[in-house]
Image (cartoon, rainbow, N blue to C red; front, top):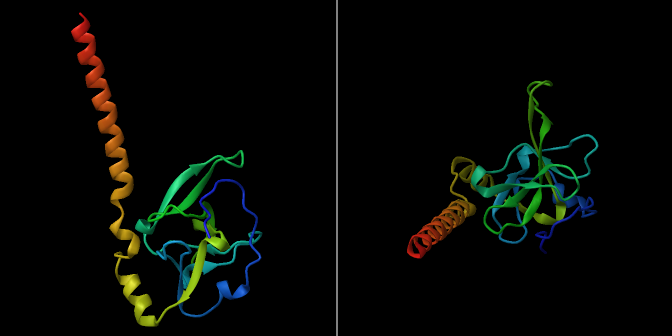
Length: 166
């Protein structure tokens, strides 16, 4: 299953057991990267998708501007495989204070799998930011660096060619 294509997605009618109340974690359906803890899941009024307060690690996801629906949204992608996970909004309400706004990650049901985990495994993931996606934070930085080098090289070659013509 891949959710990497663009466009609007309707709420899934997947079975409720994907949103169950046992120990576990939601992982990317493609690469199995740990994305969200069950403990961070909440129900948002008017949203038919599962919502989470935060990802397991900021290194497990990437964010991308999205204008596909005609309005600005922030698309959430798996950092490791670029699978489209869902969207993030800044309108979630904290449990502590009704007025305290937090991020709300709306997750496409078909983009994640719920995996039962032992409490020990969950604790280890919580204590460590070294989850499967953490070995790939260089991906975006490397692409940006390559782009800058390519632009600088083209600029230098153009300037050299212009001097040779004189």
